[in-house]
Image 1: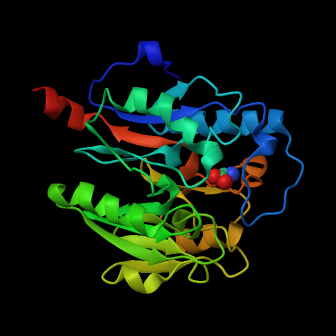
Image 2 (image 1 turned 135 degrees about the vertical axis):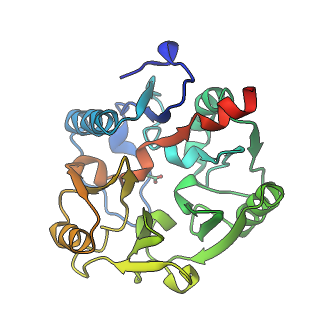
Length: 273
Ligand code: GLY
């Protein structure tokens, strides 16, 4: 695993992660009931997640922990990173806003920055990129101003930003994720899938309502190991699946995308040449 000081910007795909902090069990919860979290076990599961990304060919840049910020392992919410620009969020949960400082300091070496500003709020977990379209969930964390500001920032780069209704889930990507081949895995009970016109939608198995948050990377769809029916469904549709045990992290209302920001350094090379 590459620590910050060893990082180079050769043509790589980088996953920015952050270690699990000691106060994980005091994380924000919106739709979940608080359950006891074994923080040591969560740390081991998070390490296995980072090791899996490394095996898949990514360069993992693991940021130092933020012991005072319980949700700081969920770096995805801090920024929306595209090839041309990164937009630093103003997160919907006030308790999480300080998380942005250290991540901004890293991302600015890879991309020019834009920012979401008050009164707008936006969490990266509400942003699903499919080609040049960004679907943005309207959730308890992302408001209409957040969607509008993202649209204004990204319009000049040729991105279309489309708002999506969500219901009963923390983020848009709690209820759907892009798995490649123009296909979105979704739970239609949580996300209005009508907005995905022109894309194929695979619905998760009805008994696995939280199976839609996957991380498609390195030629596989990473899926928590507690969703065997959706796993079979994906394989039947020809998507290679790899599983991880993230049981302790799931108690925090998190999914697999939440724990990394993926950055290709191709954009950096182009910018510098
Ligand atoms: N516990 C994850 C979040 O609420 O953002």
